[in-house]
Image (cartoon, rainbow, N blue to C red; front, side):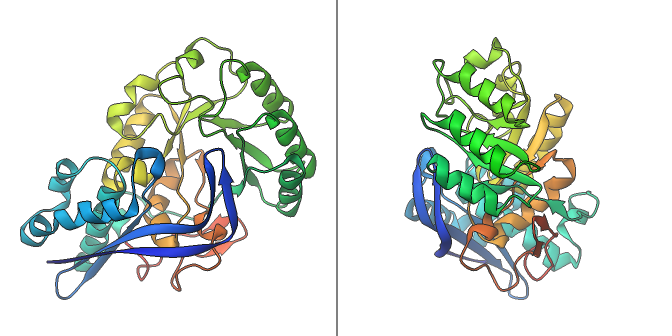
Length: 325
């Protein structure tokens, strides 16, 4: 077995802005496993929110090279690395390699049904009220919009987006930026705008307030949920979980988290970081269980991989074997 790993940079079509900052490119890690006949690939996004830096993630994978090239398998990987981008890249590469070696698709190897197309959310980046209204108007034809919030004018922002896209279903992503002081007012503004779901309104570790407050719509954990070990702490505070492979550390843990979240009665959202179709492809296996699908990363890029996922408007199709799995 041979392991190779590299950093890739993919320019965005425009700036992508959330409450924590703005970026104009997607920086991803690609891991490849080659047995001399078949090659498996996995893509992950190091995320500064969790203390991840691309160069350090690459070094983490490189440090595991002797074990990978000797006898480490996907099962042992789950304890060899913690949840995060490094394990995600390798885990997805192991799944892809197994599919190529067996001549079967990953969903078959995982005991799942064949995934079908799914409608993905499309993100409206954080900006001024006027900027967000204009962006929403351009995308008003899409069935599901994900609205990034996180400022003093959030009530005006969500109202303006609703006026600009009167027929779209709206979900709101706050990225931990509301507080006890403005939570009730922002909840009311979202209710007035007919928002279906709110993601992570309060900071991780400061979200106990959600346990006792009145929630006008389901509240989804994002930064507060990573893997199965973090699920128990959400009971009574959240109604849904956003499963991202970069948080779970790969498809293996993501499938386990989805099953456990379902058992515990949580709604499921499958989400992504901004990345290419190679990162989205494994997450497509979770869409059958998801009430909300947010896999629009490639739509935000200036260009995607040549063999990338097929998008027809907001409808995203499962990957061909040439891409992954």
